Image 1 (spheres, rainbow, N blue to C red):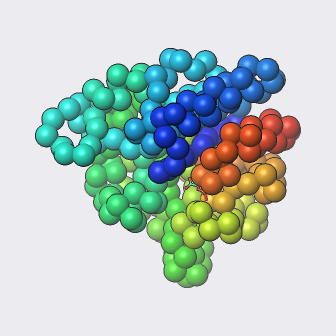
Image 2 (image 1 turned 180 degrees about the horizontal axis):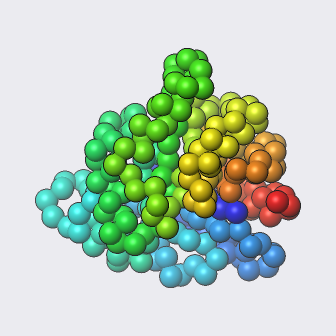
Length: 238
Ligand code: PGA
């Protein structure tokens, strides 16, 4: 079971360090066998090897070692922190930051070349959802263009865009329907759900047979709340 926290543009280096120390302490003293990942903003990255229970990852990078890419960071910079775990394709980067499928595929290929663990995000906007399941699937499959789905260090996060940060999660039966279809294509690749996951809906989401974990934004910003989510995930018997 993967339980991942995406901080987005929240937390500073100082508060991320406090958060991670508290999380490590919780994981040190609890019997948790989930795969716990935290993605702070790039300015708040800390050395990944400081943490034994939490995998620290990057929300973003540019697919180069280093060079003239103003405002971006490459593998040289991530390497300084020992980061080997990245998010790719998040809808906020696709929609707000206008990342194209072509750039996303380049990032994916670069991460794969480096042997990094990837959470690859896909998800449909509201207008596509309103057109029905075949439109949703067509949209989701297009987000796999140029992506090697057989990469062994891949997890996929299904995050309907209209459910992200809105407080409105998808209905359990809809998550189940899409996840089953995705999972039949993904095989052994872990499939996560994301979009307004919280302590109320988490257990029914991860009880679904096709769900191997969650990617959480808002509800993971507070460390005590994130620990609570981890404990709920741990308690679900699959
Ligand atoms: P949310 O974000 O939990 O705040 O909806 C999830 C995500 O964007 O990964």
